[in-house]
Image (cartoon, helix red, strand yellow):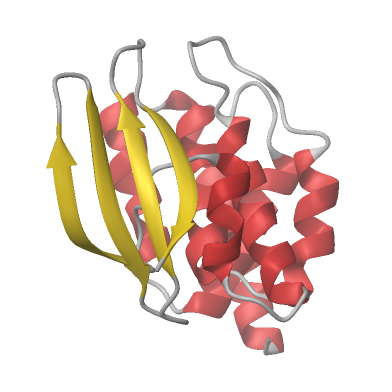
Length: 178
């Protein structure tokens, strides 16, 4: 990562943290969209900065956005910084612990650090097959359950993903397929 990207990412994180607590959720989402609009090195540095400085006033939307950026765009050399941040993240009330998103990002970066692909981390966190890494090849639906065959666009690995909608929020399960 270049010094300019690091500096720009840190400035962006500071600016986001200064403004987010006073904004409504819709405005927070719009403000956090900037993470998707900047180069990877700047976005991931800003995301790490958000998670490292996160407190109860920051809000869950910022944490989830930062985790999403790191999961899909982070690099193996950022795993230790993320690991240290994950251990200090605040919890927020809700049915689902938002820190699952940060753990998913950490699992993805750990997979990269081991020389594997990000897709190797999905079964560990049982999250949705979102992001740029997967293409859906086939889906079968039932009343409260669906099953999809997805393929990793980076390494070609196939996965079978079950989605159970019978709880308060979707629950996912992953297994390797052909």
